Length: 286
Image 1: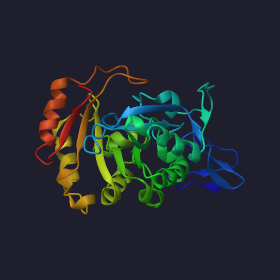
Image 2: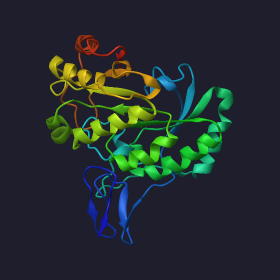
Image 3: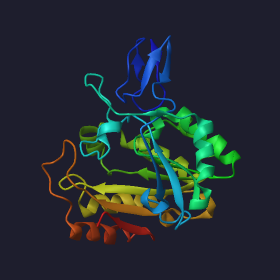
């Protein structure tokens, strides 16, 4: 039996068994990442697309994705690479790319205003070892590292990444335990703990996707934004109320096609509510 310490599940796996993230498996009594260095997606993106509004605006970043995720969001727009299911035959093409090669590729794009590497598209925490190893080399090349994440990892994993990460966009997908547990297959407190520590060490922006009928009420947004505003020891000597929050519009995807896109007026009313506690609130996908 092998134990995985990445997220709140603390999976106990027999040799050959894969965890629900679809990306970590027991091998000879140890849990190892299945897709270390396996790249499914690679693009040079504007930094604002991560989304990061207050971290090197106007620059580009080399964005890389792999396979797997430890949540099961029914609306996932990248479900083909994120939600791995051992009972299905996936034909996602991947390319093997060592940390050294990826770090060198980032420098190749310097003339295109590239500032570094963003670990994104799927959930980077399910192969955090690759993120750590690559990020060290990116820093050696005097470039920057960005992680786009659901924040569903234990703090000992975060502590191994934080010295090498310059900025994060973290999903705070809602502010009720019911939504996290019943809809997303996650744990809200794990994400809150992750955010509380991350803001102390790197630039952090948060994203909340507004799903009709789930997390689209003003009271929940007021509670969420008030909690963010109360965060302490924010990097750069800032206050919690200075942490940027992106409130994004939902579009039907994957298993959640029974809802209409979020009404734009709802997005703006929630932005207005969050602004009662936060200085920087941005509507997304509008």
